[in-house]
Length: 176
Image (cartoon, rainbow, N blue to C red; front, side):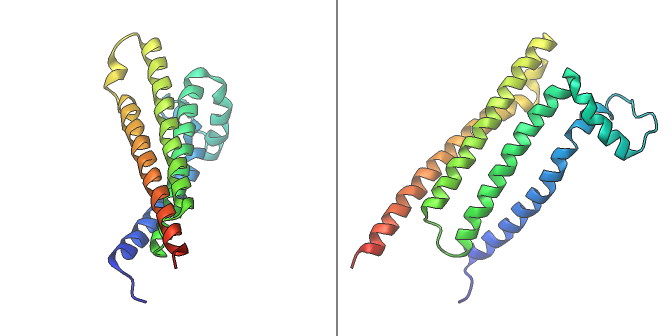
């Protein structure tokens, strides 16, 4: 059977999502290094593998730990969102998108969006408290809060639509 356009697009999108997931997971391992060394200029000529190991020891410092926790939380949630998208795209490629499993996948992705939004809100509040000024309100972190809140709401609505369509599909399949 010949693939229709939506299947081709779903295949291309699935490849991109898989590539993003494959790059995101190893990048999470580098989070402590990013905050422990390059910005401080404390490398001391140490080899990269040694810097990598020492960066995990630097997690005892609050100014390394807090941003690392935020990025691990947001990055982990993004990885879950990408995996849920990959699962939905597989069913679109197979031309059976209206399934309860897709509704559940979209609900999980919505919950992850809300986790990112909450983590960004906590980070923004901590940043405002420690900075003492309004500067953090004009950062990408402040944009994460409404963007992922709305994204989660949109995914929740899509989840309800997929759930309803899956129910209608099941009723139609049982009709003689």
